[in-house]
Amino acid sequence: MLVFWKEKMVLFAVPKTGTTALTGALAPSASMVMRDPTDLKHASVYRYQRFLLPLFRRLGQGDMETVAVIRHPVDRLSSWYRYRSRDDLVGHPNSTKGVLFDQFVAEYLKGKPAPYAALGSQAKFLKDRDGNVAITHLFRYESLPKLVTFLEQRLNRKIILPEINISPKMALSLDPAIEGDLRRKHADEFEIWETAIR
Image (cartoon, rainbow, N blue to C red; front, side, top):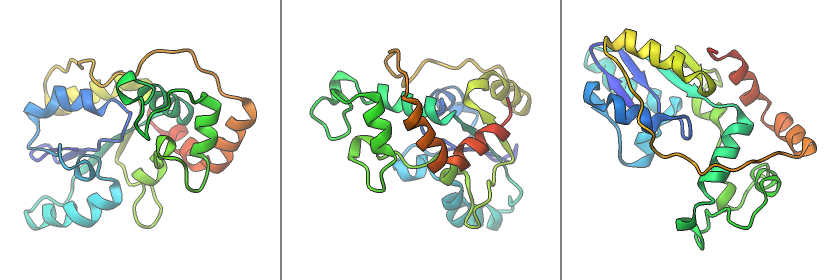
């Protein structure tokens, strides 16, 4: 998470949406850079509103605009699957080595998935305690250049994103029946992605 105090803006670090690259490019311009612990770096909207926003209000900055990125749900799962297939994860409970992509997504859809498929929900990340998406400016990962343009205008600087935290490349396809289950069980995630800035 990055906080831009003078610009009254908070950039959330939704996992697997390019936020590591954004942090690499924007940290020098930020007033606060939340790197550790992970729960603070990847603080959800709910946690932000519960813990950080009250502090900001006490310090006289209660009207912060919020910015976040959402990734197409299938593409997000593909990225996690590929990222967790790295050789350095072999033998770790999070490794997807030897697991088919269809198996990975089917496991993700379970109530208590195996560690390699326990990923949480983008929709839950972006919602407040009342279940509403509480992001002022929500961009699609697939339209990252629009976010970069927006941030360049708000921060009055040129932004070049470094290539950081890139998942290994591989051709993947998802069984239509499993994708149908994903669309049913995570309909809100697809709906939110549809409404995001293209």
